[in-house]
Amino acid sequence: MTKSLIIMDIDGTLTNSEKKITPKTKEALLAAQKQGARLILASGRPVSGMQDFAKELAMDKHHGLLVAYNGAMVVDCESGDILFNQAMTVEEGQAVLEHVKQFDVIPMISKGDYMYVNDVYNNMIHWEKKNLDINIIEYESRGGKYLLAEKRDLAAFADFPLNKILLAGSSDYLAAHYKEIAAPFEGKLSSMFTADFYYEFTAQGIDKAKALDTVLAPLGYQPEDMIAFGDGQNDASMLTYSGTAVAMANAVQELKDIADIITLSNDEDGIAETLRDYFNI
Image: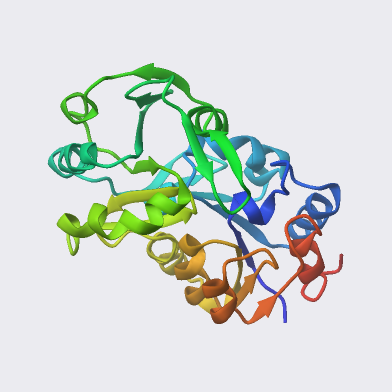
């Protein structure tokens, strides 16, 4: 059974631990497109942090799509048109940014080419899972291709709609406090972990599945046409939505629990290995 849509998360799924697409995975995806498949990258990243990967995979030549900000925006790779965009209101964004001042987290927001933070030098968090200290502002700004700017009061500064608010913190701290962080916005905004050290807010109802359904259903695509690959909690909706759900070997357990297939890890060309069953690769 062939698949006409290949949907992939980026970090921990499409890319290896060095944040690169391996030659074998790239070759498999280019071959699948030549056989008629359409690629969709679905990530918590901004569009700017996805475009280099889309270019590397020649998605602009094969009608590829980018699902950014965990589903808050969808962009056509060929035309650059925004096909879907649902941001938080100014008031919602400001309320979140005001509320999180009481927690030991680093909030990050973006507008245009810039990522805004309170203090570019207050940037270290601890990732307990790997016992690493991370310069999280550098990590995020490089991944999103952002310029950096400081604003001491992000809540006062953010007089524009935000597609997402990213909170970074030590993973143990976020695990202990995320319910308090999210509580005032339950039923009003969507929030989720996108990594052990990242917790994000988006507009209510936003997730990768909603973005996919909003854009693909009018084009006549059905879930059975789709194969989706992921590794994180924010991939659960798109794996549930897609006809074939594939969790990477490095995925969180809750994703493995809902997957149809558990493939090799992102460092072992798991995507390419699975696509061999659907394409002449």
